[in-house]
Length: 275
Image 1 (cartoon, rainbow, N blue to C red):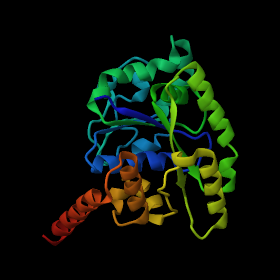
Image 2: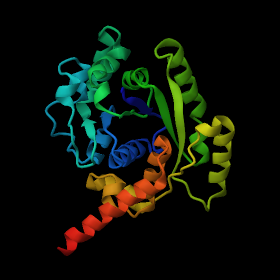
Image 3: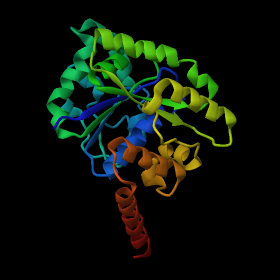
Image 4: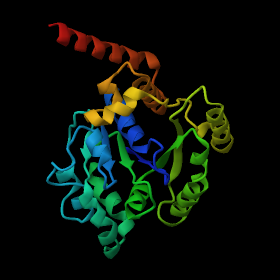
């Protein structure tokens, strides 16, 4: 069975895109799915947040895009976060220019991924917050786009541009590309504006808007500095619980199954500490 390929994309920065990509990947891995996260941002934040020093890998996604290495050679099969990773660092900045000199530059990642599609259940692309050749590679390789949207007014301003981008790519590069879902992030139930933004999203996207909302959460914000997803940093935090709920929603899994696994993991940690 071939992997479900999903691009986490939004041309507006600061909406929780990388945080969502890491935490959904970790939650699905926790639920037993085989997940590959492809870091396509030269900042390498998804790499660091997965527990890998972005300067450490000898081979990265840049080498794959430059056709100097296969994807299999570059993938880190197991990270501290529990999923596989195709890492990135600042070397990737060069690819934004050099890709233009290659034949069919928007299809290089898709071609590189083909031998690995049966090895994973999900492949996620963490896109940079801009429409460049790296983002085009992700959207050409993806079956669907997951759009993280901050529950604030200004987050809506760039939405029309993003939808126009997706529509254009669907016409010219990837006719199978769909909106996989829209995710409300940084949600604060006390903020009336947040509810107004969600109402607008429901009106526009209908059932494409995930029922699960990701709240503002201190532990969720702290986790990347420890190189861990929230589920491994603090499984009892609202952020960790929300992303686990989102993962369940994405795969249609009953909450009880995940809760049993989470309870078991917590007990193992307690046993380790008290032993």
